[in-house]
Length: 74
Image (cartoon, rainbow, N blue to C red; front, side, top):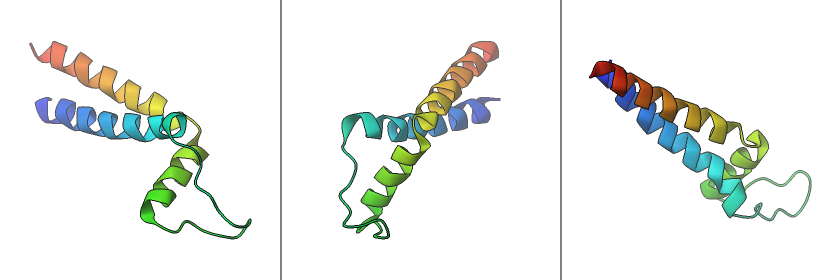
């Protein structure tokens, strides 16, 4: 269970950070409807905008699950 709680915590932190990106940064500029991202960072921003907060909710849920599992171990 300890490995699972650490894995859930790491994944929860990553997803929470990805979920916060749309609230902190603006949408990357693109020239037209068929233009793609210029860098991998723009791709990450576009994906986090498209998910519309699901990453944030899932990340917080995983963090809560990880803290629940840690309390259960003790």
